[in-house]
Amino acid sequence: MMTQRIAVASRDCPVCETPSASAQIFMEKNVDPRNLSAASYASRKEPEFMCHRLVRCETCDLVYVDQPPSASTLATAYHDASYDSEDEAADAAEIYFQSMRSTLMRLRQREDALEIGAGSGAFLKQLADSGFTRVTGIEPSVAAISAAPAAVRPWLRQGIFIEADYPPASFDLICCFMTLEHVPDPKIIASACCALLRPGGVFVTVTHDYRSVVNRILGRRSPIIDIEHMQLFSGRSIRELFERTGFSNVTVAPFANRYALKYWLRLTPLPRALKQSVAALLAALGLDRKKLAVNVGNVIATGIKPG
Image (cartoon, rainbow, N blue to C red; front, side, top):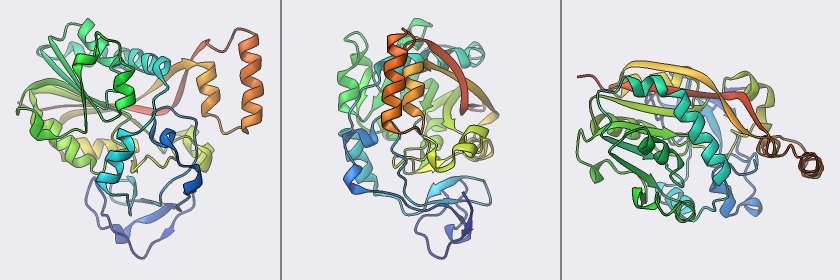
């Protein structure tokens, strides 16, 4: 991940708007069209280690794609994305909920909650069970919504998040987990969330931290190096995003994800044949579904709408 100056770019930093001409190359483009499929834009897929050119903003520390695909191209890709991660979605929902228990305790009320990038609605179920009166999820993938349990599906809307689709100041909680890396303009999303929250409402995100130890060690073979990612945050840059879009009392903290061993194995940069051999051994020993909590360099950030 050596850096060098770049000469020309087409998108300024989507967090602080520093001109991209002053950014430094973080990683060169590596995309093989022959390897693209419906799984390329699916959540929790086996890593492909492809990416668009990534540059790093020296002002706010964000890494971002300076020449991204169009918003319509991305919308189509996510609409058509496959979905095969129901077990992992349930595991993620559980750990996210546990990680934000103290945040939920500070809410003034538990009336309305929105999740952006809701998948099959596993986290919405957690919120409903915790006492929220109304929960809504927006999800672009048709396959993910189709995989939702019948009781959860009415809470899900198919499409992309648009602020105008919701009344101002109508939510007490808005969550966006592993989604801000994928959107064309994270600042627009965060600003919209601030406008849609009631005073005292909370915005919660989970993002990768490209500066974490594990991601720095893995480098180009880290699962965060992904054609889906339009930007990658650090602790500093996600805080910057929250503060620039009107949130107060911003907190950013690492946490441990908890998944089955078979899923952790899928994320490793090992050769596929070796992965298959290890997977077969884990299954034979009855260990493939054994859950393991690991801090893999993700952070949970929260911010409160003043008032």
